[in-house]
Image 1 (tube, rainbow, N blue to C red):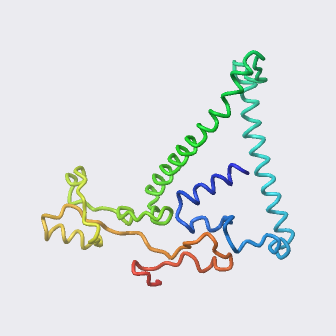
Image 2 (tube, one colour):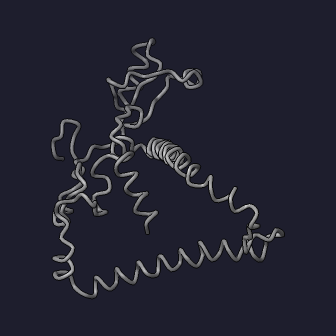
Image 3 (cartoon, helix red, strand yellow):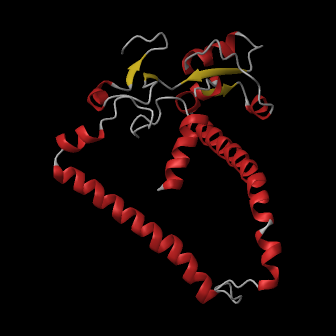
Length: 218
């Protein structure tokens, strides 16, 4: 539970756009009223959430920790457990640990964050959701490119993203203007989305409203 909370806190504060994780309560949310929610919400709902958490973390312990431990015990040719350190090595093993720990952990945290930043950027680009998840507006994710011919496709001709066209108009422009080798055709859509992690649940029905590029409600 601690590791999961640290992971969510890391991606919320350093990677994702504010408002993406609105459905997970933030510790900085001024609207959190734990005692009020406990008194107002039905007991059956609270018990169902408690049982779900109990089952989930029990499975984590049994299959995660237990599966790894007994897997090493029964299927490994090397005897790992129990770990025994000779008394003559206590001084050499114990003393450097605090120093190495304080030097190693900040470096580890840095590279863990860099790793997850790369993962989220890659996946967001593949899903064409960089603008929504990372607040990184990438024009190439708004649609697809139509090339004049196979040769231009192999050369990866660059279209003018500021002048998108429909497929029909693109075919006409290819015939009218021989200098055009690629045209960008948009096929995505814009929505109004939460930009704050402290969104109240009663407003959920009013979130993710389809709009035009000029923020006009469709």
